[in-house]
Image (cartoon, rainbow over all chains, first blue to last red; front, side, top):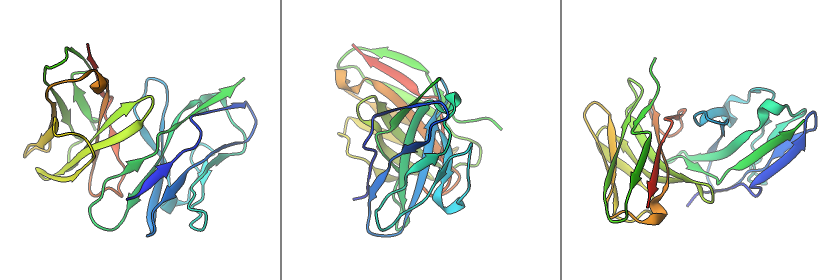
Length: 110
Length: 113
């Protein structure tokens, strides 16, 4: 079964510092990976997906099949980036659901 | 367009009772998934419905059940509530398969006392 691991429950960084939220997955096929974000008192929403290969709010994520990772990166953290971040995987064979990691809370300190 | 609507927003129930939660998807979205969100476990998948059929099911006991109506609205039911069922229950709807963007509701906060 596919699995998503986010090793850090909490990540604290200073404003302006680089940030990397780690995500590792276990799936032998060709997965589709996503990052979802939940800001305080807001709904969980899609941040980015690997197939679009775009930068959203300064965040990027590269799928590394060799390391089975999909880490989320931003060169300069902003206070408004403080939120809960979830990595999610979709196995594109058969009708399988979206599987989420347990999430990492990012706290950006001014 | 209107977002995903979950009702009620908050519920307090006692152990042994049952509860029904409702989710109204975005118009045109046929897939509805339910997740249980807790601080320690994150989002755990409960089940997914597509065109009134349960397409996927997570590893939850049979006390958790759901259904989807012809208008794509979905309900989930939890019977014989336990203290450990206290959580935020999220509904997510998608226009197609699981590879499309999931749109989440604000959730129903269930507290079992």
